[in-house]
Image (cartoon, rainbow, N blue to C red):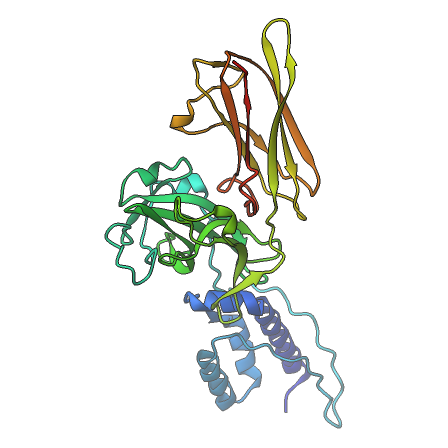
Length: 398
């Protein structure tokens, strides 16, 4: 028969073990995500608690609990119980456990670094999945130890075998999970380009970031991912574009849509189409208020959101013959491409943005403007559904 002193010691040890077990509980979704990448969970019972239990329990019961604890992956949480006094004995209320100097029960925790930024990833090497699985382009677009270079300026497209890092977003991939880095990568092969979106995770042993899985990739002569953004809840949004064949396809006949990638409770990738994707129609118009006495013409560029949803960020670019135009911005010859003159933030449906410049020009000069989605630096998915109205120009009469 146990004594009141024994019951007090048992209750103290039992409460301490129950509180320790509660500390080891993990959110189910977060635990499932970590499970696929071999997250280790360890359950350690305090020396003090085991010793206290051994004093009041039969030896066979203690051995059975020790064996069961080794077999369990997840910690066992004891239910609250009440002990009725045996007839003829005084009822003793359990007291709070006395603080002990012995090691406390704890879960082995894994500390993760903050997800790497774009600049931190530039210059690093990663093992990657194929940009177009089964297409045989892995030698041109290397996947083993691929070195990432800053691809936002398009330099990686100048030669084969170069991998451009286009965008990085940090987002929880499951409900309640930590933030993961998601990368948009590009590579040129021949006269075409391939793209993929990969999810990184951090190695427990070395702390290095490695490719966990591929979320999206180009399909030969078909669709490709072109932009990524963090979903407002969790997961990542992926802008997908139908293939465009230069000079043979009207870009306005192509389809664009948005997919959402996330991880389910089994840590498998789930892709679903976002029916109300954040795609809009932005138009550009150019006009003049006339030429003043000094020979300068006021040029006004208007950018209007004609779509039904808010736009992403856009870049306004210009080009002209530098020998014919003098302006407050850098003028670049149109044969060398467009030069960005202004970044324009998101526009609400029906909202217009206008900018004006004083420009001096000779007769016959043409100043062209063009608006393009700021794909790689905007926080959202940027795409214009109608390309025909994305440019405008002003021509000075001879």
